[in-house]
Structures are given as C-alpha cells and as structure tokens.
Image (cartoon, rainbow, N blue to C red; front, side, top):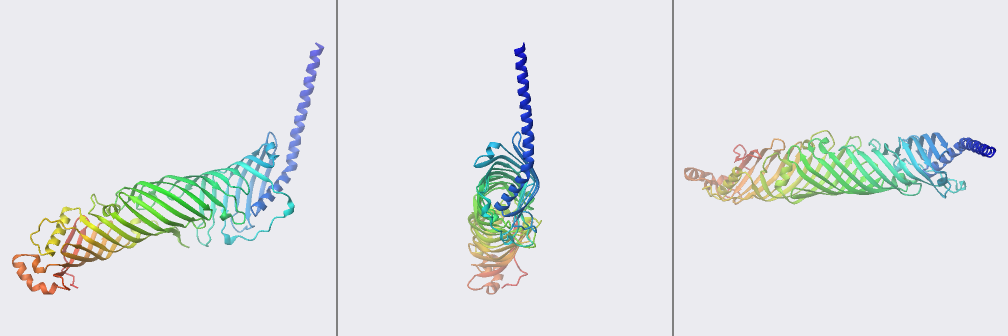
Length: 517
C-alpha cells in the first residue's frame, strides 16, 4: 500500500513539473514573441525595402510560436522608389502566415501558407520610376525564404498608363493561388479573372516571375487561358455566346497571345442570320494602355474565310477603344457574305467574291450597323440572282442589249461585277460600280441602306444593239431616228438607267429624268 502511494506521489510530482515546464515554455515563448516582434518587423521591412526597391509601411505585426509559428499583420504599403504621389506599388489590407519551426531553421526557409486580404498591385510606367539607392552590402546574406502556397482571392492588378489622361488597365482577380513564392524565382499560379466586356470569367494557369525589381513591368509572365460563355449581346448590334482558349507569354507590359474563338450563334442583328464563326489570332497586348495589335486574325464562317490585320487602340480623352482593321477576303461565297449583312429568308445573289477594305468601329453606345465604317473595293465572279423574277429581268436586259426581242429563256450570268464602296451611318455608297451581261456593260453609282434594304442606283448601260433594235414593229421604226443620239464611242447605244426598289425586289428602268452623259 505504501509502494502504491509512493508511485502516485511521483506521478503527481512529474505532472506538476511538466505543467510548470509547459507554463514556463508558453510564458517564455510569449516573452520571446514580444521581444522578437520588433526585430521581426524591422527584418520584414528591410527585406521588402531592398528586394522590391520600395519605401515600406506596416501598421501592425504580431507573432506567436505555439503550437506553430503564426504571423498576422495589417496595413502593408509599399511605395515603389518612394513615389508616395502615385498609388502604392503594393497594398495589403491584412495577412496571416503559418510555418513549422523546423522549416524556418533550414538554409532555405519555408512558410507553408500565406493568406492575403485586399491585395492591390499598381505597376507604374517606366517614365515615373526614380533611381533607387543600392542596398548596403554589409548587411549580411539575404534570407532565402520560400512561401509554399499563397492565397490572395479578390486581388487587383492595375497597370498605370504611359500617357496622362488615359485610363489605367485593370484586372480584377476573383481567385488567385501562387505556389513556391520567393524573391528571385518564378512562381506557379492558378487564377480566375473577371472580364468586363463581354462579361465572363477567365480561367488561367501559368508562371509569373522572377520579379524584376529595377523595372516591374518587365517581369515575365506566361500561361494558358480559357474564356467560356461570354455573351456578345453587350455590344449593340451583335449577339452570340463566345468561347476562347489560348496561350500567352511576355512581360506585364507586353504580352503576346495566340488563341482561337468559337461563336456558334454569331449574329449581326441587322441581318438576323446566326452563323458559326470561328477565329484564330495572334495578338500583342500593351499592358500600359490595353491597346492590342492583331496580326493576324483568321476567321471562317459557313464555307468562306477572311483575314484581318490591325489593332484595338484607345485615344487620349476618348472613352473606349477603336477597332481598326485591314480586311481581305479571297474567293469567298457571295451568299455567305450577304447572309451576314442582309435580312432575307433567301440570299438575293450567289457568286464568288473577293474584296479588300479598311474597317473602323469607333467606341460608343451605338448599334454596330450604324457606327461601323468600311472603305474598300470588291470583285464578284459568276454572279447570279436567286430570284427567278429578278433573273428574268436581267435576262431580258441582256437579250434586248443584243437585239434579241423574243425574250428567250437563255440565262444570263452577271460577270465582272466590281466597284468601290464606303459604308457609313448604315448606308453603303458605291462608286464605279460596274458589271456585264451578254450584250451590255453597266456603270452605276448609288446607295444601299442596310436596315431597309433600299436600292438607289443611277448610271448608264452600254449596249451592243441600237435602241431601235431593242424593240419590234412600229416602235422600232420610230426609234431609228433616235439611234444617232444614243450611239456613242462605238456602242450601239448608251442609255441612262436606274435600279431602285429593294434587294429582294429590285426594279430596272430607264432614268429619263437624268441627262445622258
């Protein structure tokens, strides 16, 4: 009984000693944390100041060592090269970090997790960066510190513009996770970014860094992206759900992108005909302005294709950006092009079209059909009208031009259809519009209105036959006296004509009110 009592007394003694030692350890660690706090604060400020060439402010920093190292802080500001007149290079509302003590005793010290709230990064243009004094080489070897995982959801990246008056380029990053973060080394990232227009989320993975302290805008970045279910209806005059994937590489100030898009229901609303539009593109994005060089863009739709080169750029004092492209189409189907632009249940013409045009889409909240501007020239081969009534009118014109008055059923193909065109404010103005049918050459100028489909063309028809040969009987005899007045430059007759009506129902006739040229 005495032996058992002695054992119990020894156990109580050891438990008491253990409790005292634990209490001493906790108190000691608390005292150590309080003593190390100011030292750690100065070390953090010094490292950040030297590595990121910035003046650093830190509102609060707290450290605990039990059961593991835990650091919390608030109000971290870093002013790159001391520029307090600019937005801070880095602003962090609050942060907390965790690490095992043994991980901090290694040559390469590891922090397991760092979480940041309210992270904002502002990259200023190179012209705004002042020289920064070199660090004191006598301060000892820099600490090799790696953060295994950084979580900074709700972060914002802003690149300030080179030119005064231009808007900064901003990315709102809903979710951001970085791996193996350390000074002087690249880091892997997974991010979800918000795209403003068209609205949607961009998923991206890639590599960022190493950070270039002398010029943050030159910090390299590369990766892949996926952009899904972007609604194009936010742009007035078009609609469709776009998806895009691609790869990018470069620096924060200059990123090259190779990607492709697919919009299976792309529609220009003035026509109302959905098509499957696919593109492949190579672009260069100026990170200081958001201006984008497109070189080239290749688009395919239905059984046709086009290529474009140009850019999407902003202008000082003007809100929004202007699209300016040189567009080239070679040997496309005319009916595919018309389906994009004309509201009709049936394409009015078929053929093979080639054209070149400058295309400008200025910023603004107008329908794309009203603000798009085109200036180019085109040529169409083997053109035929799909409407039997219209084709019959062309056939009769061809027959009379050759002196054939029996209105035979021979089908006439429109050839050498070409001209110059300018689209502005929803109307296409054609100059030097010319085409041929057997027996006649037509030269016209006029306008076509996109929304209503109205035609208003005036010009001349150069006929092989004389005017008296275009009819029969008594009319033919009477018109013989007029033959010399219409005969010109070796033609049988040159007469003024007009084409009016709509694209679905054009009307061909003599332009009797127009003086013959």
